[in-house]
Image 1 (cartoon, each protein chain N blue to C red):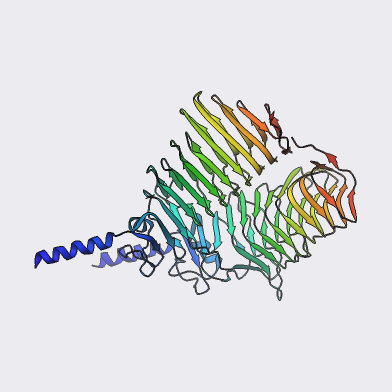
Image 2: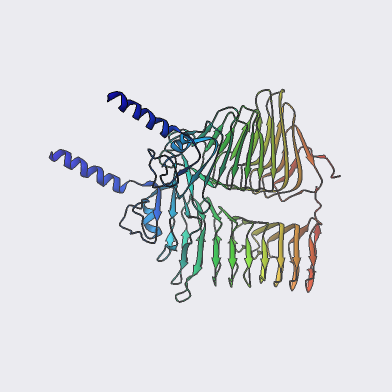
Length: 302
Length: 305
């Protein structure tokens, strides 16, 4: 009898641990549920435990879905249903989301990241390993350290149609290795995007169809040692009313290529300390305190 | 036992008055509630009183959330859940929202501002102090004075993905100091455009940037007006369309007024570009065609580089 009970418990345990292709979260969920659509869980770690590698997590209604840092150790696509707010908050001196597992591909869609004002956290997303992170249709608000911080790994980070508002440090800060693509996104009275090399590495940044309004530095490219390569390209974007539109410094190889970019109303439009600024000759750089400091090299369209 | 009870009631009192990081509004809320998600409040002033500085306010469903002018005196992010209409109405000859507190950073997302037709108010938002206001994904309709009026302070106003429809005066009027950025927004149907003004008798610099916007039928889509000799006003317009109105872009200068245009289509207006004092810089890549008068005054070349 006692043995039968134990076996029963074990089976129940096994059933609870079977992983689903898709798991669900809701404001009315409970983490002891199986995270199914009819019995959703409440917080993201429970849904991550219950989802299969490569699976989906849906946030069914508007709520906050984390208690502290959520480590995402498997490939997964996490989205709040459009029309709902899937909130993740950085709290207690730590990031909202941490990604540090090699090989993972993670997609985040329609999420709203912010920082708890009464018990502040650090980053929205800190990523130190993985193949690829795609952030789509999301919002990052009120961070005082970087909103998205990929560093010291060679994977890819893509950000699409996302709004960064009132973040006081760089909204996105990539260091030592990541390949970053930022598309169709807005940076509003918010730090901009930085690519930084402080170790032997190649860091890549591409910005297209973005608007930066009031960034300390909208696009910053900085190779701090001779073995760090940092490459950036900016296309069809607007860099306005900040301190630096484009800032570049290269102890090692550093370059930024500009095409169809409006740089205006900044204290410094293009500031070339060292490194190379390549201009396609089709940029509007006007009305800055200093439009161009240093040298721009022509790289004609062809 | 008595001590336990007293302690418990102290804790309850403390909880009731502690400011929350996030507070909630709903059509079914009540302002005597703690503004939590399970017990939301009804009107914005209650949610503002309960939220911590730098916190969040969510409007959970579609309703009007103000009774009169709401003064926003702390940093806060206010949003209606997408798919819901978070309405704020200007009533009784006053603005819907007033911002005058130094240092605040305020974000508004997915809100719908209008003017009570039976008891008309003034502005959607009047701002005279603060570090930054960001208006995102919002709508402004049927105002007879400016929908957003930012004046006499040096902060920043950013407007993204918003619609301004059927307004009689300038949709956005920035005067004496603010730096205003307008992105991906639409000014639709016999509506005012954007006015950057310098009227102060002390030196002020007012800056306006417009990118990826469309103006249809504005009396003056973009007006750059330095009325006082001490004032400087400048505007930069990029990748936008200005159509079928009175004046597309105009500069008027007793002081210093400058506008710079790149990749702008100006078509079907009475006057496309009106340079009446000040300077209008063209990057040479603008389509100014099909206006009754395409260019009145002088366009100065400012080549791309």
